[in-house]
Image: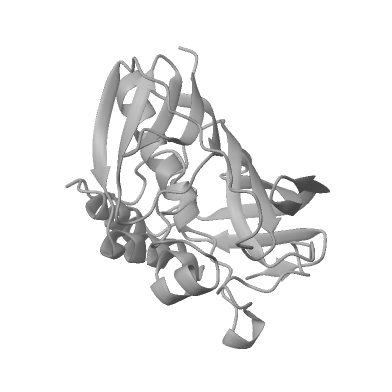
Amino acid sequence: MDEISRDTQIVTDQMDPARASALLVALGATDLVKSGDPLPPFFHQLYFWDVQPPTALGRDGHPNVGGLIPDMGLPRRMWAGGRLTFNSPLHAGVPAEKRSCVEATQHKVGRTGPLGFVTLRHEIWQGGHCAVTEHQDLVYREDPDSNAPQSRTRLAPSGEESAEVWEFNSTLLFRYSALTFNGHRIHYDLDYCRDVEGYDGLVVHGPLLAQLLMLKAARELGPLSEFTFRAVSPVLHVETATLCRKGEALWVRGQDQRLCMEATARLAEG
């Protein structure tokens, strides 16, 4: 980490091509990325690690709040969604800079209790211009309460033009956590998931689901200019999930037909 304050965080990275190759292989591809190659959309998640010593981590494995991210007074963190603008491709092996700031915070009360929302704005600069702008939405919640109302589930849409079924396992979750340097214990510590956060299995990373949807959109539609996604219901590592697309709308359907993530792609002009 090069610079951090309460308001701004700036981190540089050499954008090692091997890291991008490792994710492609982990996802079942055979492509290898060379220095100078354009990176797939959202692959900047593999870079700009926030490396903190063990004493600076919270109980969930994330860096303690109170630095860039304010303390919302709630212990459980989830990546609720995001909005991305792709101005130009990032390139492997070319130094880049990530500039982050807090754009908004808000407290609300939902059906299951108090909620804290934080929106981060990230700009990824490379070659003297901003290649990617990302708004990252985080939500903080209380620990689970057996007496609280159950969250409502929504049925996923049908009528997709294309679909692909994905199986998730602890190995894939571990590899994605390692490549993104994500220490959140809900992705690899089953006892913590069950006993502290109340999940029945390891939680598939929200950004991993979003990554798969972005790769699907780019593969089937072409280069992306914008992508928006929102997490609706968690996917567990013991489940299969179906990635669906109809036009520029994409979604993840759980094996019980529930909606897990919804997204919208916008294509680059020309």
